[in-house]
Image 1 (cartoon, one colour):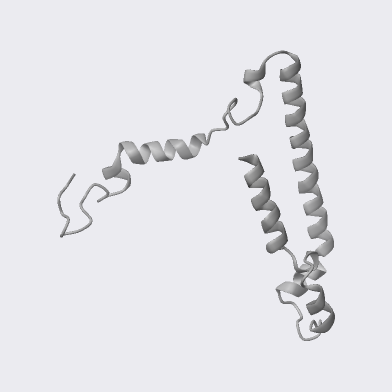
Image 2: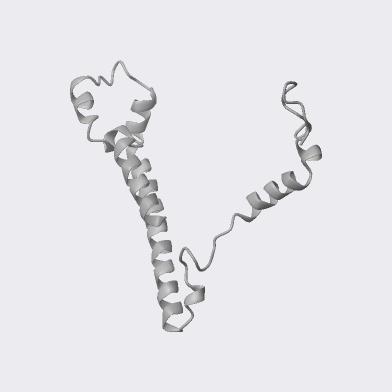
Length: 131
């Protein structure tokens, strides 16, 4: 699961860059076609003017994610050293549950007439049999 997610994220980081100056394919446009006098205050101009703030915020996000990933490694090493593999983070051990989303889905399942009026009604006159 984690390997597949890593591959998808890596592909999208390459294929759909978030900012023009981070991409490899936009360099030709920036040298050949970009004129700051005619493209004043559009999206690209604003991104270029704020690139220092954008890079610093991305750096803080990277540091945050790095420290938290390192914390998970330390947690798993500690649990392994203490002989408690059932408390380690993995695909089969501690499940990270979406509690709020499950509560909303459960509410809709238990009360379809109240939360979604007409959810139990037939959708077609041809196949109008209520099952």
